[in-house]
Image 1 (tube, helix red, strand yellow):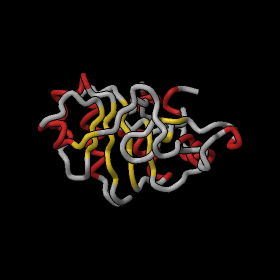
Image 2 (cartoon, rainbow, N blue to C red):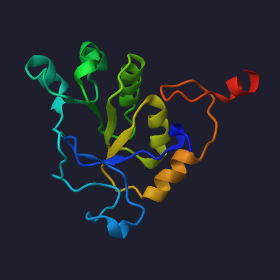
Image 3 (cartoon, rainbow, N blue to C red):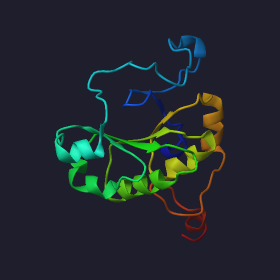
Image 4 (cartoon, one colour):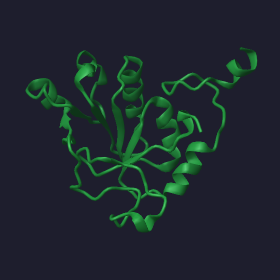
Length: 174
């Protein structure tokens, strides 16, 4: 399976919890929800995300930044080489500004973790992945099998995007 069809990890709670792949057997998970880590679980080197304003004002040494809806992702462009995680807030599933933030960051060359956090629905995740998100911290539990099905539903794409997949027209016509 190529990288574009690999299931994406679901992340822990708000504030930049560690990314966790869902175990194949839910009984192997210490958490009641096998697709999420428990709030407060941390791994070495994991730090909570600071707001964009705090990062720009006084915490430019932080390696994790949280973008709220309405924040301009372009403010991070001079700092992309030192940021390991950008957590993009989706306050409601209808708010699409986070898609634009992801695309701006990926097109500018950001290679770190890009996490969609908040009211993220499973049917949005394939589109979020195309925009450049590589992990998720949804408010509601998402079944790993349902996520896998959503991410692998369509073999081909029709447009170029941040995920680097080749559009079907280019495959047909070279």
